Image 1 (cartoon, rainbow, N blue to C red):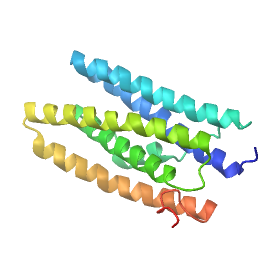
Image 2 (cartoon, rainbow, N blue to C red):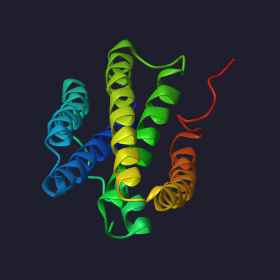
Image 3 (cartoon, rainbow, N blue to C red):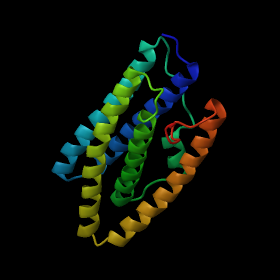
Length: 189
C-alpha cells in the first residue's frame, strides 16, 4: 500500500499528543488523593498510552517509524498555559485537551478519503475520549463545588479554551501549508 509520507507526520502528531496527554495524567495521578479518582485516572492513563500505541503501530505497519514532534498540540498549549498551579487547573486543562482530541478525531474520521485501518483507530480513540471527557468534567465540577471554586473553574476553562483555539488555529494553518487543506475542514460534499 502506497501512502503519502506526510500522513506519517500527521499520525506522529496524534501519537505525540497521546503520549504527552499520558504524561499530564501521570502528573495528575501523583497529586490526587481521592481513591475513586485514582482508579479512573489509572484507566484513563492506560487508554492514553494505548492510543499512542495504536498510532505507533499504524505508522510501523505502514513501514515507517514515528517522526519526532517538537511543536505538537500538547507542547504548544503547555507553553501557552504555563505551569498549572492547582488540581482545578490540571483537571480543567485535561478537559480542554480531551475535548480537542475528540473533535479532531471526529473531524478526521468524517473525511471520505480515510483508509479503513486509520478510520478504525479514529473510531476507537473517539469512543474512549467520550468517557474521558465525562468523568474528568464531573470530577472537576465536584472538586470546584467542594472548594467553593466554581467561578475559578469557569474562568480557567474559558482561558484554556481561548488558548486552545489559538493553538489549533496555528496548527490548522501549518497543516494547510503542508497538505493544502486541514483534516479539521468540513468534509467534502
